[in-house]
Amino acid sequence: MESISLRELARDAGVNHRAVYRHFPDKLSLLALVAERGWKLLAVRLKKSAAGKGPGEPALVASGVGFFLFARDCPNLFHLMAGARINTEGTFPNLEAAVIDALQIFAVGYAGTGMAPNIVIERTAVFVAALQGVITQILHNRLHVAPAKAKTFIADVCRMLIKGTR
Image 1 (cartoon, one colour):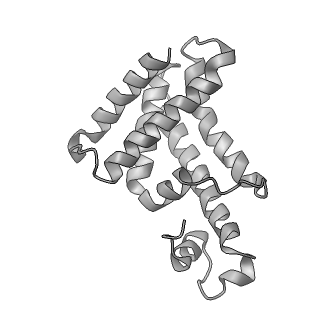
Image 2 (cartoon, helix red, strand yellow):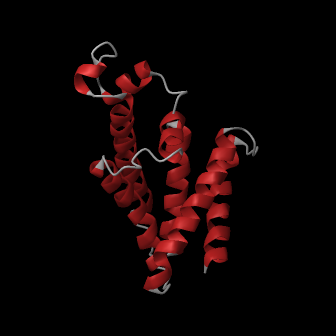
């Protein structure tokens, strides 16, 4: 979180960087708002990606590709959202609600695979964590994937993850 400048955070939150502390008591509060907005934007992207797809694997793959495209288009925001947990003290309930709303899209996809309801949440968590790791490696150029092949690669990764978590 230290690599994110106050100027960038203020811009992302729609606040003048000079006046930021008139609006937020501290940097953590500002980070929480930016992350909350990011999770809300991600939820919109995931819902659009999965719209019209069949339940289960088609929806999960489409959402996984949407997750990648979001990260590719907003890498700094993705890294903030995928980094250390901001809401460790439970101070930002709106942030927590935004995270749950976004991740619920993946859980609904897993429920559509016919998986037993009692294991949907843990499988969703594993799927998202693994996909987040692959996406992070691509964004950091540790995993080299040609831009023209990235969506297909992510779709294939999603299929492997789904198969592996059944």
